[in-house]
Image (tube, rainbow, N blue to C red):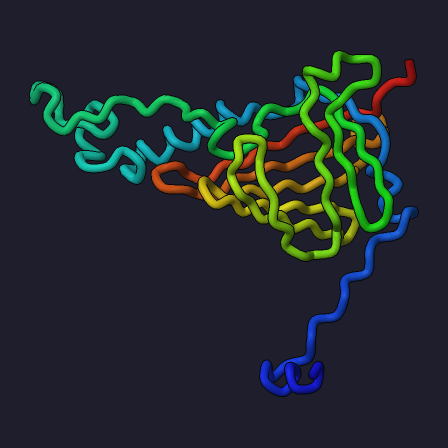
Length: 216
């Protein structure tokens, strides 16, 4: 049967993706604390991206590029064609997690990563459920806390953990985790979170920086 599938498809079956070794992922593991001063805010980045598209006439809709007011008509023409500024959407519903967690704990049992925002000793009622992803390149069906169905695919390549989320509603979201040398040569966890363009919303990407958590 496998040979028949090979002939019909015209190409060999995809080979299984080998999970990364414990040694390869070790720099990523452990506790991390957010460096808020060096991290970007998602909502501010989105509003800035939307503002840029409004200036270019790509976001304001009909009437965009009219003098004096974004998306409106020239001054003195009343409200004809005027589009009020678009407020920031409810990003929590639109794209899942957008607030940078104050702390992360990353563990690994091949081939599965567990990313938790729970801080030891903290009130568990304030913690989000841990994220569990398998770095094998396969799409896994699941649900967000709000019930939205979603497909998640995680991969590990060249020291980076990548997570791609494709929801039934809303923009595609990607996350990239990597460790780099930071201030004074100490390791830093860099998390890049990106949303694809969706409807009138432009693409947006932010960068969060984490330092090694200090021992209690």
